[in-house]
Length: 262
Image (cartoon, rainbow, N blue to C red; front, side, top):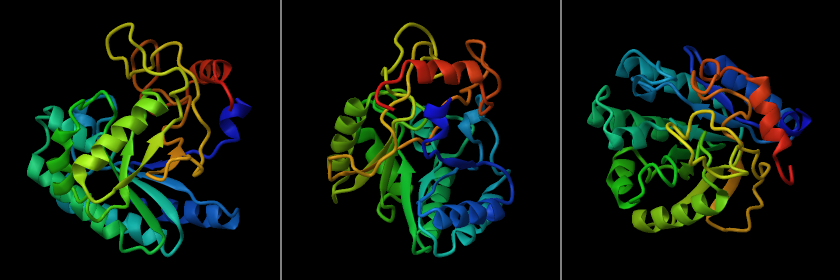
């Protein structure tokens, strides 16, 4: 477990009234000389009603929630990942959410967060296998405010290798134009993606911790490798796992035992 505990991991904000928790995390990180990673995860119709369903009850509530999140940041530095899965799910056919409303809310979130001087904001763009044709992401990401963001995030809570994710990220950056940077979630991609059955994204067996968090990526377009998903937290009630986000010690131990160079 030490292999997991000693590494910086993201804090997911997914409940009402995020301001106090955001403020506490950025203050703690500043005192330790670190930059925290925070995840805004409260968009209406979150996860399209799947294992991590929830989010704000309406657009007005979400705007207020984002304002509280941003206010909590103050002037402290932080990496902020905006709404994992929201854009890719919409492209893939989520019927629960209205596309124009969702993209508008994401654009509002990016713009509001970027008012905080220390925030580096990355709009989630799915993973290398979800929307294989990166061109399909371009217009949705533009509608969702990518122009104001520092870049985009890839592989959040997924298992695609760093090499796959980086290659895909470069393709997407070229398609977007403007030289956008990106970050990659490497928390559980040490053995790459699972190919042995349904729902390969949900608690797949045989996976491993990936590259530890670092800003020294060796690639000028990749701002950081981050552990956005907290290793050992379940993806949902599949393959014997507990509810999404619940700590699962057995799975955590498996990730750590199979890890290299962590």
